[in-house]
Image (cartoon, rainbow, N blue to C red):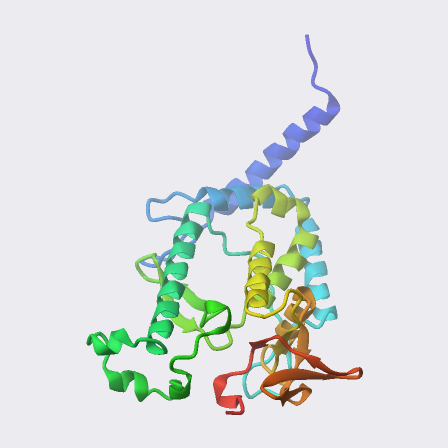
Length: 307
C-alpha cells in the first residue's frame, strides 16, 4: 500500500492551512450596503483575480508578509521616494498600501480601451483646433469657447507638431461610481504625473514579493515606457537624439518622480536656467559647453513657462 512521502504530506498540510486561513478571511467579510465593493460582487461572489491573490497571500508563513512589506516601505524611505503637497515646505514619504487594487484582465481591457479612445479624441480635437478648425466652422463648437480659453495659443495655429502628435502623454483620474462602473473624474494633459510612482511601486513590490508577482501574471509596465521613449525620439530630427526632461526644480510636488523617470529613460533632467536658445535651436549648458537638445519633455505647467 503506497505511503505519502513526508514532503508531500507537508505540502498537503500547508495547502489545507492556507485554505482555512482564506476561508476565515472571507467568512467574516461583509460589504457595506448600497456601495460597490471590490472584493464581493453584487451576486455575492468574489472575482477570480481576488481569490487567486488572497490564495497566494494565505500561503505566506505567519509574519512573513508583514516582514517583506516592512522591507519594501523601508526601501521607499531610504531611497527618498517622496512627494510634496502644493504649498507645503516639507516632502512626504510616498505611501505604499499593503493591499493592491486587483483588476482582472477583462476589466482592465475595458478600462484601457476607454482611456485610449478618450486620448485619441483629445488628440483629434487639438489637431483640428490648431489646424482646419472644422469643429468651429461646422458649428460643433462655439468659437468663443475656443478663442476665449486662457490656454488657447492663437500663434500656434497652422503649426504642425514635431513627430505628428500634439499630445504625447495623457492621463485620466479614475474612480468607481455608485453604479460600480469606472468613471473619468479628470483629464491630465499638460504635465501628467503618476507614471514614475507607478514604476517605483512596481519595482519595489516585485522585489519584495517576486513569487506573488509571477503567480499573479501582473501586466508589465516596461513596454509602455519603451514605446513612450520611442515616440519622443521619433519627434527628433536625428537618429540618436538628446532628450531632456524639463522640470520646475526640487520644490516641485513630484520632483522625485521626474528625477526617477529621467534616470530610468536615460533623459537629461534640466531646469529653465540650464537651457539657452541660439538661432532657433535649444541647447543645454554643460561643463563641456553647449550641447544640442533635440526634444524637451515638459513637466512644467504652461502658466510657469516663459512665453
